[in-house]
Amino acid sequence: MEALHEAVRLLAQSQRVVVFTGAGVSAESGLATFRGAGGLWEGHRVEDVATPEAFARDPELVWRFYAMRRERAWQAQPNPAHLAIAEMDRLFAQLVVVTQNVDGLHQRAGSRHVLELHGSLWRIRCTRCQRERHDEQVPLASLPPRCGACSGLERPAVVWFGESLPTKVWEEAERACSNADLMLVVGTSGVVWPAAGLVELAAATGAWVVEVNPEPSALAHLARVQLQAKAGQALPALVRQLREA
Ligand code: BV8
Ligand code: ZN
Image 1 (cartoon, rainbow, N blue to C red):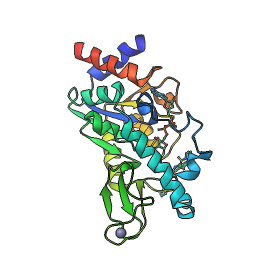
Image 2 (image 1 turned 60 degrees about the vertical axis):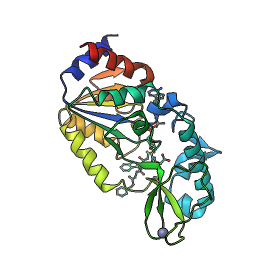
Image 3 (image 1 turned 90 degrees about the vertical axis):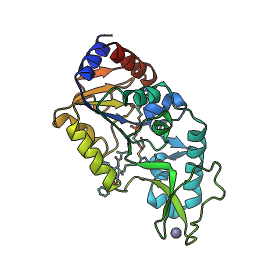
Image 4 (image 1 turned 90 degrees about the horizontal axis):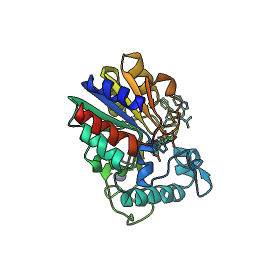
């Protein structure tokens, strides 16, 4: 496992680490990835359901998709990859998790600094008065939920295809990625933009990139080290060896 030793060697020399994650880090928690299942849900392509147009056309259909995602994420447990990433909080002066995931499993595993580029299943926003609230009710009392303040139609506070990412989160992620000594890229196909651009930014500003993925992603060309393994195997091994380093 030469690659593992090389990854540990680079990590041991790093102070500022960004862990950039995608759906693959939650795969071993039993949550489907986007492109693994062919990105299909009830015969719909995810890109066709996770859009503002789909919500305008059929809010019930879109809410059924998100109610199902909330149910599954609620029943899922953080897996050894999430737990190892949370463990890494204590091993580095600065560690930020920049995730494309909306399942909240990094926070449930104990990671203290998580930037959710694409929002969260556990936040709901009113489409009329924009009031946003945290909601972990499974199942939801009513579909679609209505705003308590103005009784407007509420939506999941996630970033749909065609929508821009939350500015504050994006700017904080850009800062962390351009200052990183090392970026761990875990479980992402690297096809969704502009999130994938953060890996290019990290590499361009001098970070070592270490990719953890059973198969090379679209970002593999940026990786100095490629760990072709499942996150649930590779990350605990990295942390074990770091502790001994
Ligand atoms: C925007 C929230 C316009 C909802 C999601 C260039 C620039 C800008 C935009 C674009 C562009 N090119 C194309 C676009 C449009 C689009 C886009 O990127 N489309 C893709 C499909 C080509 N981008 C957008 O629409 C973005 N918005 O740009 O708006 C704009 C621009 C400027 C100003 C105003 C407006 C918004 C994108 C966000 C969409 N929302 N999620 C929800 O989750 O329901 S994206 C969705 O895909 C999830 O967040 C998911 O995380 C993300 C990315 O997928 P991955 O995480 O990588 O998951 P995937 O299944 O693809 O891969 C899994 C990987 O894990 C695989 O590699 C697999 O090998 C690996 N794996 C499997 N098992 C394991 C494993 N790895 C480790 N261990 C294992 N056990
Ligand atoms: Zn409202």
